[in-house]
Amino acid sequence: MGLQRVVRSCIVDAPIERVWAVLRDFNSHDQWHTVVAQSEIEDNKTSDRVGCVRNFTLGDGNHIREMLLSLSDKDHISTYTIIDATVPLMRYVATVTLKPVTDGNRTFWHWSSSFEAPPGMERELRDMVAHGVYEAGFANLKKYLALGQTASRQSSFARPLTTSAQAIEAPAIRLRDYGQPSEMRLETVSVLPPAAGEVRIRQTAIGVNYFDVYLRKGWIPEFLPLPGTPGMEAAGEVIDVGPDVTSLLPGDRVVYMCPMPGAYASVRNVPVSFITRIPAGVDEQTAAALLLKGVTADYLIRDLGHIRSGTRLLVHAAAGGVGQLVCAWAASMGAVVIGTVSTPDKARVARDHGCAHVIVTGNYQFSQAVQSICGGVDVLIDGLGNAARDDNFASLARCGHWISLGQASGPLQDISPDWLVQKSLSFSRPVAFDYVATQDQLNERAARVWQALQTGVIKTPDIQKFALRDAALAHEKLESRTSVGSMVLLAS
Ligand SMILES: NC(=O)c1ccc[n+]([C@@H]2O[C@H](COP(=O)([O-])OP(=O)(O)OC[C@H]3O[C@@H](n4cnc5c(N)ncnc54)[C@H](OP(=O)(O)O)[C@@H]3O)[C@@H](O)[C@H]2O)c1
Image (cartoon, rainbow, N blue to C red; front, side, top):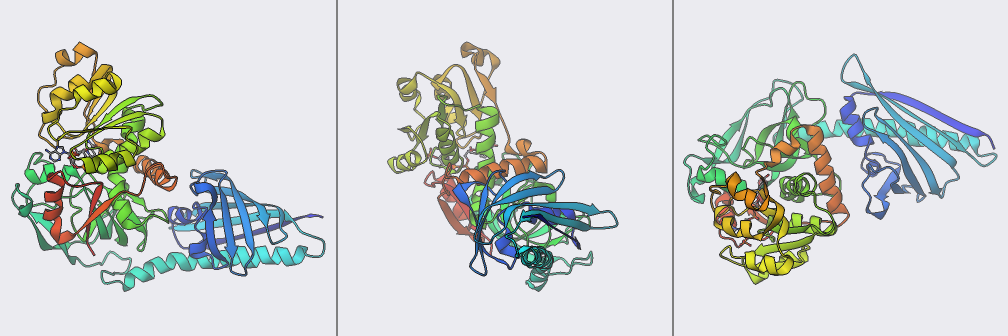
């Protein structure tokens, strides 16, 4: 049996980042290649993990299992091999390589393979791979990329991909005075065409975060000058892109977290560097409920808390948005997780999300219980602020790390070095946006969040939903201490 070779190439009329975004996803073929009816990655692995196995059901009823052998985002190359198939392709190894075409936003795509075939079937199988798989794949992917543009051109907010786009009138929450939730009112605003480096997004789900409450109250006015629109994260569909944007196209499903507020809106322009794609299998509401809180859990556990097996960890508001994620993730790493909550119902939720010990307290009295459970904690994740200040100090073990995440009960007062030195404590005051300062960092942290979701390390969050116009009700709920899990506003 001789080794058969098939080599095909084409030019795609799209920038390399765009083509690679589809091809690097080892599980994307059933979305764009007509030969593949269904694609599934086995064993809950992510589709960019070398060694993962995809299981194809082809349109003609055949089955193929292929393993990813290598994936290079730097060189835009992936290789894979067939490990099992009902078609007689033996020792099949294929390589996909992309190169940018330097005369514009186009991409050279090279697809090659070698394999063995049973005697007499060489030509038939070479033709099948060359035409049925590779040539058809080129045509299908070009159609798929073009469809993204066409679909959005037909949508109600559509415009062609030119700089002559119009402003769009769309509903958004406006805050004209700091204060009560009722200060947030729905108005119609004009959203200009995206500037260089931006895309315009039709948002479907907007994540509500406790930080939005601080801004609404006017605690950090430099962050949200008036009149302004609150909100730091949302998910939706790109409807058009700014002049120099090549990595996203209309029709792409995206989610972002952005340090400039403005997310409580149905249409918004966002700089590309704050945006990441939503993977297949994650819906937009889950993405908006998870991104900022999941990224926060990721940096708390990995970068600041250095959580490992046996770490004694105290998490306040353990049934809340961030709380649920931190508890579940840290417990999966073997930490001894202690949570505080204000009601027995929330205690059940916290236990469900990995809390080994739950302290029910509505008035920030928890240090005695902490001391009797574990003699003091190594890491404290504190979103409560001033009312819990003294009990937090009393709950920490020697050399403990106090991570002051937020201040739901009011701004934290007087943390002096002379106080901390009594127990050799360290103190951190982090902000999530500093941990995703580049788009690569955002993509990397987001990928870990999606993977934790896919593998069941964290559960799909409990999501409470409100219409965009009811943003005030969502804030009332959040501040009433009756919410559980995450909240999203639905914009369309
Ligand atoms: N720095 C960062 O990077 C970062 C990022 C994300 C979030 N955060 C902070 O993390 C914390 C959690 O945020 P989240 O969005 O997930 O909110 P959340 O935990 O879902 O909601 C807040 C929870 O805080 C508890 N709480 C205690 N005292 C409260 C009070 N006086 N008023 C209102 N709530 C009170 C309540 O739980 P119980 O009733 O069970 O006590 C309440 O359900 C917040 O402090 C937020 O600012 C910081």
